[in-house]
Length: 124
Image 1 (cartoon, rainbow, N blue to C red):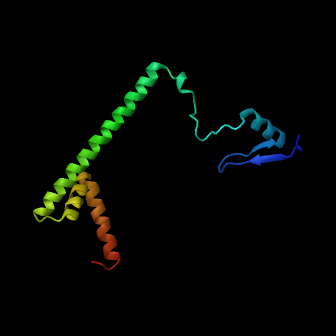
Image 2 (spheres, rainbow, N blue to C red):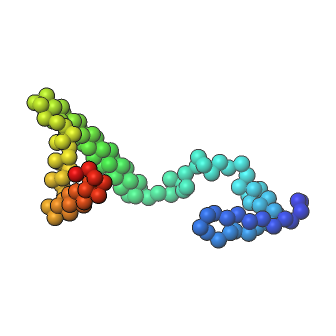
Image 3 (cartoon, one colour):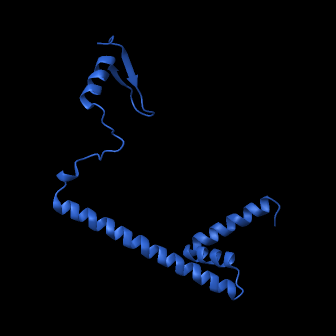
C-alpha cells in the first residue's frame, strides 16, 4: 500500500476536492480499466420503450427540419443569384433584408448612432 499522501483536485470556479492516495487507489481498483470517455453515461437498456420512441421521434424531427432548413437556404441562394443576374447588388439586398427584419424605431436608432459615429470619425 502506498504512503497515504493527501491530494487535492480543483476545477476552476469550484471548491477543491481533497482525497488521499489510498482513496485514489481504491477508486482505481473499483473502476478497473474502464474507458469513461467512450461509454454512455447510462445503460440504454434501462430507457423505457416509450422514452426511447420519444427520443427517436425527436431526433428524426430535428433531422427533417435541418433538411428543410438546407432546402430553404438553397432557395434563398438561388434568389440572390437571380437578382445578381438582373443587375442587383446582392450585398445591398442582404442589407435591405436585414434592416427590414428590425423594428422601425430600432432601425432608426441604429442608423442615427451609425451616423453619429461616422461624424465623430470625420467620415461624413
